[in-house]
Length: 374
Image (tube, rainbow, N blue to C red):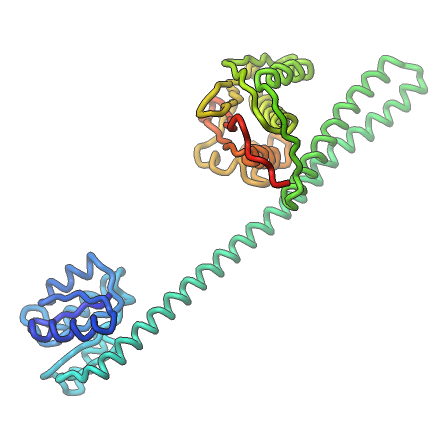
């Protein structure tokens, strides 16, 4: 938008008509004081400013405008009928003007200058946008590279840990077998199986994330009942984690059309995390209810909780809460995979948490999930 500032109404009207005829959006002010008020409220690409005005003259207005951070990029063209000497033209440029035109105004020249300033403005704006996009892309690629390196380091460590443990138990097994100590052999076998199960889970997660990235994560959708699935999961989790008491609150007897095994994977991931991040506690609650033509399932623990700011990122790929990453193992991809599974069922995931009070990870899926494109 262009602002014309002139104390003579005839000049305002004639200039306004010419510029509007050439599809420019025009605003007017009849004094320097009015112009400053308008500059504070609106954004202008160009200001055509008369030099001789009562009160504040054009030079004073330009100097005042140059102090506004909002208008420092705005171009100013001075118009003057009397002050045509070199010293006044020089003052115009030093006051912040980009051009100085003497009256009577040649409308053809003025239009040419206005169009030129507009072209420069548009090109400048595009260059700024391109620069910002490039900076955003560079920042994203730096961050991405850092995340990739960090993930490779974490994955190598996480995979190596159970492998080293299994290797140690196998060596111990060999010694125990030589001694004929069958009781110790059984203990070592059980411990080796636990580590192998951890290794299997890690590999399964890595395979899943690879399939998600390549768009090849398969779903086998059919009808199932959420209540039955939850009862089965609670029984399995209790057998492997007898120290935790898992309570189920609510019911969802309706049939759901979805991939039962993938939904089970999500719930087990939520429960496993709840147990991991709740040291010193022994109770976990599963909340289930029919809601908004679908089923809500939440897994609530009474553990360490998550900071409000970090809750925004917990479902991001490779994200690990900094304070817990030091103390708890994990690749930082379980929740990302869970979120992808729920989204592919037309649902949504979320978390409600407070530091020191625990967390509730939840999802909501419709009774009939969309047909998967795969």
